[in-house]
Length: 99
Image (cartoon, rainbow, N blue to C red; front, side):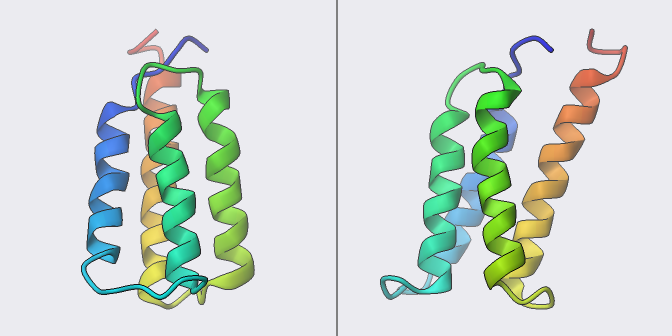
C-alpha cells in the first residue's frame, strides 16, 4: 500500500486528546497513559506515511484498552471510536476508488 495521508485522522485523535485534557489528570492514571498512546499516534501521523508506521502505536493503544480500560466507560468508548476511524481510513485507502 502506498503512503497514506493521515491528516484528518490525526485531527480526530487530537480532538479526543483535548477532550480528555479538559479536566486535570494525575500522573500515572489510566487517562494519563491513554494520552501518551494518543500523542504517539499523532506524532507518527504528522505527514504522509506508510500505514505500518501507524500500525504499531495503534496496536499498542488497543492492547492498553483491552488490558486496562473498562469497555463500558467513556475512555473505552473513545478508544473504540478512534480504532473504528482508523480502520475506516485504511478500508477507504485500500478500495479501488483510491488506488
